[in-house]
Image 1 (cartoon, each protein chain N blue to C red):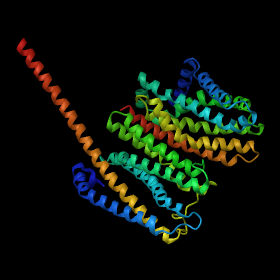
Image 2 (cartoon, one colour; image 1 turned 90 degrees about the vertical axis):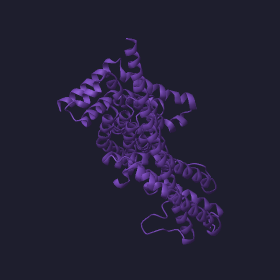
Image 3 (tube, one colour; image 1 turned 90 degrees about the horizontal axis):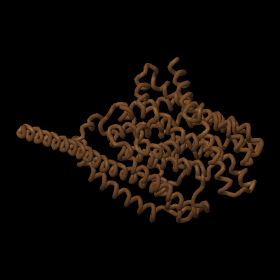
Length: 221
Length: 256
């Protein structure tokens, strides 16, 4: 178990030392959201209607960008081989990397999301649910993304292929995440959507590390 | 299952079966189309446009069935390391993608007169569109990895992960309030569609199944042959390399 926590600490420390990977992700998030008012015009009603979707899609894409670094960096300098050979089960290793990825990329997004929702004129009743929905849904993004990242380790043009593989699997998270916030913004109960989001995250918690570990063993053999 | 693991035996058997499968396909599809276009009655509400159903519904069924076969073959390849299972899954993928595309396009053509729109983002249509992306991602993964063995296993993992989408598609019209109509054939209580339309539908569905079998056998034979060619090419490259090495050595010996 000490290996598990040590790996999380190592990854978080690496991300912090690599010139603020978290800030870069949040930067992309902010810029991506900013593109939409420039594209559709500043009309309040229109922005309020699309605010939830825009914030969620931008968060999705920001998570996607961070997945590239999940295994590729370790693969390139050989530490991935060492991690696979270590006594800690590979599934736990993958889980540790997913947790570190969530802490360094998804958590800053969850913190930044309400600010961006504010500038996109999301109705006030949706803010609390936005934070909760993103906190519940983003672990699924890291875990499902790990499967895609593991399958494209060492593949040429793996980044684009990663997006093609992972985005269809992300769509349920997007649908329920947006559904929860829209429900709350309209005054309905977000509970069903949040519970389904939680179910997806829990399912991904079990299946994601397992599938990703199998893929890692395969791709590095 | 392991009887067909021997590629040579598979090629012999499939070579004998393939012409018959093709003939059955042509017969069933021909008869089915005749029934669908001329014998089945027009719908009291939809008129003649209901005849799109005889292509749209079987195509949608086959799209899901092909993915299920792909996932099953992938599981067999991963668990038992059956030598032909991963090639079977690879053969299925373009066929399944084709069926999905046919289902989406014919559905769109049907939706325009029926619902007044070419497309709507309801649960059934969206989840079938996701199925198309899953097929395309699977094909892309096969092509992206150079080593065929590695590509086979990676694609097998991907196929199994994407199989989660299948129950979502099937039950989407029950779980969500959708524009797409709920199940009328495969549901509890039996089909609620009239037999004058049910029988052409079943014959068309059987024709599509035969089409899948024919095409899958054809592609699988092609994949087995491709693998053989690759092995022969590698052997040839090895041989020419060792010949070159031998010639260099004898040349150097003669020189010294």
